[in-house]
Image (cartoon, rainbow over the protein chains, first blue to last red):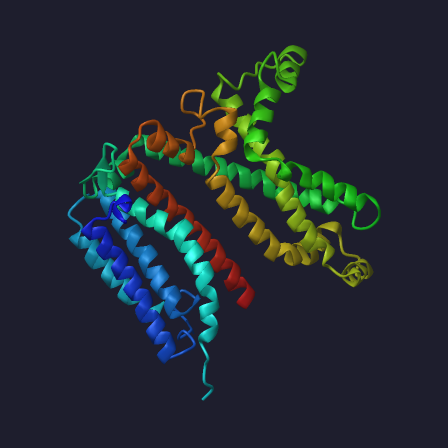
Length: 92
Length: 287
């Protein structure tokens, strides 16, 4: 049924990761409603969901820039992305 | 503590399914395509991130991206000030209001491919009205099928004709919401036309203008039909904007993998710029 979507294990893992992150957000929202809104160092008012969005978008740019300028393997940008996302959830 | 009832979220489910069906599932398929190679017949071979690397480093993509930013930049530079100027000079009461509004709305009602075809016929040298007038009456050497500059001028003028109205109508909506008392106060203080514009009209138009700029950015950045029908991306590659190049790769060459990688990069750019616009817009509203 899903063969036309041409699934691969890595891309499936990426989507499982994104959807489980969203699932975690739902659980957090049910437990601590209000989205943990705050004004971060960039002067933006962000909720948990905004911070996840910024982390994902930022990570995709880190990967793309690394891929364009340096190329594979992608362990370095992975590390940078994780650090950037952690920073995003902590301060932004 | 106030208890929160989250049951209302279930009302979002139908639209969620709809979006999943027409946006999310195709999007996920594109992601899957972008790491594979196919020769048709629904057979796929793992390719890793090669397509992304190729696209990011290809001169063809850089050129198309450059043309796309040039096009969108020019569109915004022309349509936003022009739209504001037209909105300012439109009457605010009387019978002419409806006449102006209808005249402004007309270009936007015409389907994109028809606009392309209209302008193609209009600007063809020798046959088209504008082409004939420019070449044979004014003596300007104008041929949008051979000269890249003429082709660019034509697609820019065409887009300005088609979409300046959007900026006009949104700015106009902002303008008519200003109470008459503001103008009377400005008159009493002896404010110049420029100060009225700068301190009364522009601040009132700010929200709608941001939306207008965001819409014009997204539309012109994703533009396909009009330049495709008008110039077909030519002469040469001079008006091959990102989407035209993308369709050439995806459907012309049937390179689904590279096309998928390119469309994801394209999507990332659109998403970032739209998010920046949206965030800046809300930031200003909060302060």
